Image (cartoon, rainbow, N blue to C red; front, top):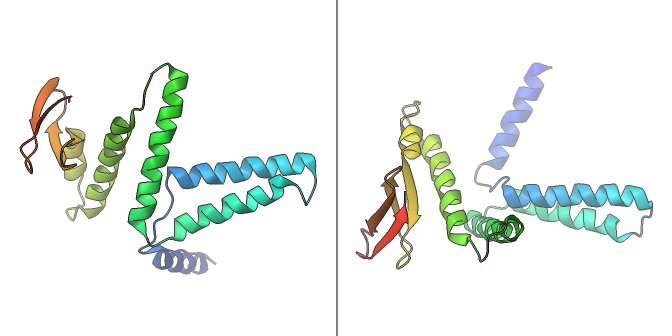
Length: 169
């Protein structure tokens, strides 16, 4: 019986190669589908709006997870994170959008994840070096710039366009 599940797991892994997978937006739409399912159970009607919303959110979730257009799904998720931070920031008392910090932190974790996956030595050298650095985007040309953490306010010079900007590392 164990061999069957191993083969099933391997075949699913082969199916998912090149597909986007799960992210924060997919998990959010899955949560919305679950909430709509609970509301549908409470109101007990097959023609209920909640019944159809369950299906809509499930279709959106699985479409995103099985999509091969990774860049488009990544951009959608980044916009979702920016909107989420903007809404939550208002509840926390901050004013104005904080999209740059969300994009920077999301990009940092995405880079750390990709570097750890691509680390051929099997060690944690790449992950350790990413914990020691912070990644910012140049406001002029959108180039990613990696700087050391814990240096306070520093002036960063973009290697691509030479634009100088100040950030806290």
